[in-house]
Image (tube, rainbow, N blue to C red):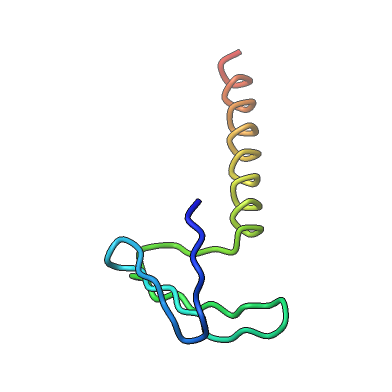
Length: 71
């Protein structure tokens, strides 16, 4: 993991196409703005993990149904 210090209104660039800007800092909260191409999905980590879990469950369900159909 790369750890960087940034102040309000400072940015960093990822892969020449994603810009992350610190918009505001209040106490222990940081507001971050992300400018990226529309084809790059951006999720909060907790939402991303929920999506991954739902996909895993769907695959498990589909695999079980496929096995039933084989028999």
